[in-house]
Image 1 (spheres, rainbow over the protein chains, first blue to last red):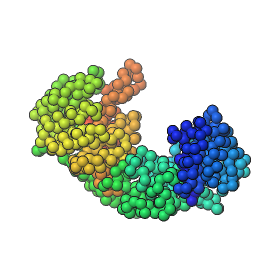
Image 2: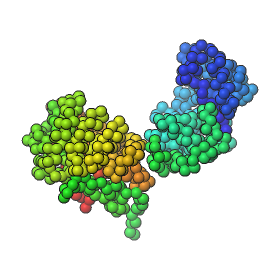
Image 3: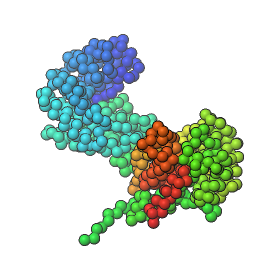
Image 4: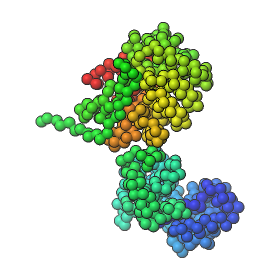
Length: 278
Length: 314
């Protein structure tokens, strides 16, 4: 399982300041902590970085790989920064990954050739400009477009990690099952099966803090059972990593809560923040 | 060859709620099938349409309503009596607009006084609505609930910020409660769970999933109502089985199609006719979706909807 640690992120104040000041310490600390906790790839989210993207990415890739012997997932919309990161990346522990292209033509035309040029991995997010995908079929159709573009520019589809686009459960309950089904469908699009990845924490967005753990854990388990091969996660969440280790949410949460949460994910019980209390 | 009608089997049932007292008490809910699917199960009690009565008039009341109600609407008691005696209303919905802090900002005591006078005059069930400003509705509806003690009224709308106050006032005075959520069925369920956790009996709740006028988000309201009803009937979700309350009068009479003059938009035709049809069409859509109680303003629109109900209920 590809476990991509999500904690190096420009949204966090300390990380943002470290990026601005080129201060290696806070970044190296959290990089090392994530790898120690089980991450085998690290996401490097520098934001749009419009002014100095290439410099920041070059610096941070080298800084992180000094202490973390894992490949990196370069997370920015700034293509020049991605190029700089790919040049700086040490492939000794595996190929770098671009996070991400979508199914939008413009994005495919700009990001996919760079992935082909460096023969790196890339996340293919199943989203187009025309609104959120309605179901698993629409996601699969976008996936096919992404794979087609890869073939056109000479990137092996084995380098693509298809992301079904996880939406928050609260307000999009039907989409949880559609995501799980999309992960199943993606695999059938190629032989060997396509790789898949999700941004897992989205599922629990707007849920109360005490609910985030079980929602994330149960959804992860269901995705893994559907064949998921990768996830962007917080490896510093100890309870969640225990679920990853055992692939069993009941190692942490009561079995009846896990069962009920699975039914919520499948749409058999309507979600409400307090669904476990009744 | 005979056609065999496919039938859905429902595991749940809409809760039956009674409002009012004595001979004029009305029951709503009770359906064990989707709305008007009488071939699949019990359609439950006839939906209840309550006539809106305001305790203070807006500055520019719609001319369609002026023509129908202008002779009585200077006084909420006269208006309520007219609805009950002349229009044969099965229920009256008294909206305490005078309490709006951005308007007259009348006190909870004065609102309670009005409630008392109206209740002294009528014997059909009374729905008591605040001005729909969370901070003010708490004390106003508490005072109103006290004043209406023992009359089994329906009071609301309780929202996330004030439901505890209003629910407590409803419980201690023997009233039913309207639980409001803003076009969000997950939140509708959550509020019902919170009410249950606060020891409010789910059997005394009406869910208000937010009314929208035709052309102004009606399809969203429709979907939310459908989703709630499906959860209650198909998934047997106990928190989603209360009947539903839709406050049409509060939304229909504000929209452009009701307000725009014939001089400005002659192609839209007679404004009064247009307005009344708008309220009636919106109402019928809400009933199709699954609403049990509607608040409406125009007597002619109510009569049109009642006739439709006569046909649908058989």
